[in-house]
Image (cartoon, rainbow, N blue to C red):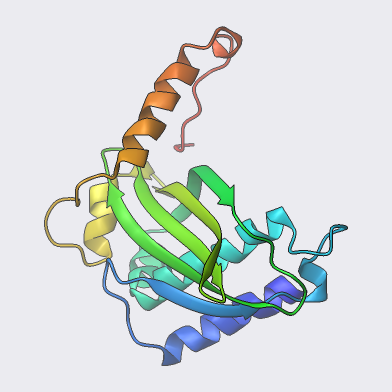
Length: 186
């Protein structure tokens, strides 16, 4: 229930908050509630990822991209997430979730999301995202254009190339040879 109320709050507040440009960060303030904690009495690792959904929705709403997403029947899909947890968040501790578009390539949009509290990094996640429509995956450059980006993608940080290299290593892994490659298009 807490997550539904938070999402409704993000949606409602997006109407009153300033519009975001394509590379403007979304900043959302939250507080760790009792439903967010686990047996270790800190915010559950999975809850960080649920909270990050709210940051991505804030970007979609405040950039105005939601209109095109509805019109074109686009659905966001996560193609991978790299998460590093640095510091625990305790019950009732406040924190800020920051979400920003980093760049894109021929297959993915890359985002970075951070959770900070009291000026210290608690968690950082790097994600690759695609949008799927009725005819399959929409090219990331097209999505970026619909979000208001003019021109090509910014240079890719080194972590993106390392991720691509890891994917190449995994694709050649013997235990995966029996599996079909996954596709975002259905």
